[in-house]
Image 1 (cartoon, protein in one colour):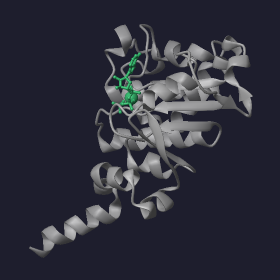
Image 2: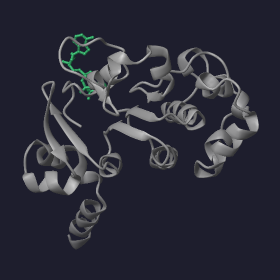
Image 3: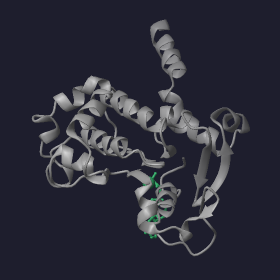
Image 4: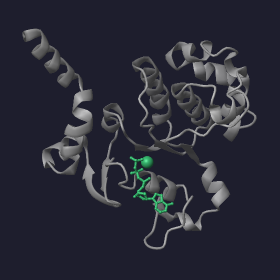
Length: 223
Ligand SMILES: Nc1ncnc2c1ncn2[C@@H]1O[C@H](COP(=O)(O)OP(=O)(O)OP(=O)(O)O)[C@@H](O)[C@H]1O
Ligand SMILES: [Mg+2]
């Protein structure tokens, strides 16, 4: 995590080798990524970018993107694991709904769910999520959280977090500022440290926590 422009998306793009780097090394399981066959390596990655990439075609076409032979029954089964599949039922033709140019006919939340479904059927070794900053309604957020939890159990995950629940799900939090990693640790250890993470937490995340909401409610009701 880190402020806007800190370099979070850039790091994700470097890991996926969308950019070449001039200095340093990037190791996966102790091996330099530069030694990997690019095509083979990318197949191991499931990536959901800040603005999910959908192409013109149906929802099913988009989900099948990385695994062309996945069966429709498998997609439906997976879809039902996300909030009982209600998100799919609200689409006019379910899996066969046309998403439009760049997914323009779907809401932002629906686009994110389709992008996450793509990763769910792919079951990549490494999942990279650049969480969207656009705000979504709590119900969609809950569905996205369910899809995320399903992915997190199967893949090593690198999450660029904009929501408290995502940050707290991490075993290891890396804090970036001005293109550099400045802190690493767990939520508790970083809060105790009182550096940039604590500042960011108070600025962006504290108001998302239940304790904060309840405290605010008490203040209002006490008036
Ligand atoms: N292709 C590029 N060439 C040169 N500079 C770039 C390029 N892409 C991004 N930058 C710059 O690198 C810095 C880090 O950008 P990056 O997109 O990684 O930030 P971020 O941490 O993901 O921010 P946000 O939270 O807004 O998504 C910014 O100052 C940006 O302008
Ligand atoms: Mg970014």
